[in-house]
Image (cartoon, rainbow, N blue to C red; front, top):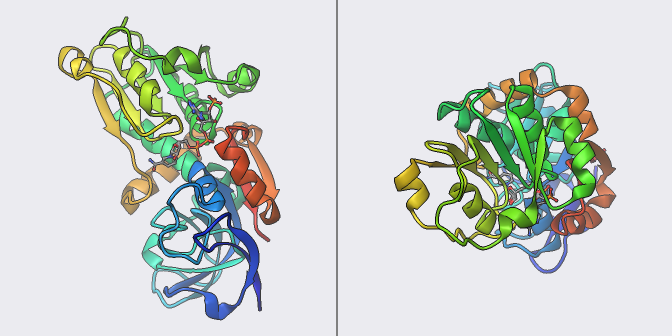
Length: 325
Ligand code: NDP
């Protein structure tokens, strides 16, 4: 039976089209997809403005959640509810913006108890990455009560989940946002204070500034991450996962060699399965479902091309679930 899919040909924006079962890729598990989600990388892939899709034509969508329909793997059976994020979906393997997908069994994670399929996609790659950042900060020794923790790009997907998680864990969270209109929303997620996007994005006047942050989660990169590092307190861990403001990092080594600041890189795409399972379990435990609902909107598959433009223009708020059914 034909299924709908958002497909990139590698030239121009991806289009909503129909695919047949014979278009499915190789893999040992076939999943009836219920939900996908919208991430910054999806914006780049669907608009064709970032070099994300490396083997066109390819179904876009870096995330999916659904029910196993067929399995040649002993690890999964028809009826199992599963989640897949990263692993090259929408880059080298067809992704989640479709009603049916075939995948490698090793990529699947069981739906974590405590989250519905829709909620797993409200979390999605963005929320998983936020949790991976929190785990990185905790592994580096950050504890509640250590001081202010700044989250940059706070109004976005990774940022919103990071604010909610850190506040729930007892940290004093400072949200950095370029949208003052989101202050009330971010306060509702647990932000205690705000800095403006401009304040952090400005060019450095000095290689070190007054030490303020006990920890940080940065989704923006470039001059913003550089400011955070210049303002990080002695020994503070800074988790860097994003490049919404640019992929450069204009900084001296002084924060590292004079203050022992620790820059922790976070990747969700190739993240090993045991770490993913740990992160999903923590998300089920530490992310208030009411706050998750508050930061989430649900959109149909047909809206994906418009949403891709919106996320690149910084017009989306929090997380967007794509209902593909
Ligand atoms: P969103 O677009 O939802 O959030 C990004 C936020 O960054 C925006 O909401 C905005 O927040 C801020 N922002 C946007 N443009 C600029 C700019 N030019 N300068 C400064 N701030 C800006 O994206 P996601 O949350 O999905 O992803 C955030 C980043 O993390 C992306 O770069 C993405 O590629 C990366 N990422 C990395 C992953 C990994 O595995 N390492 C996984 C997931 C995401 P506000 O309006 O509040 O200022």
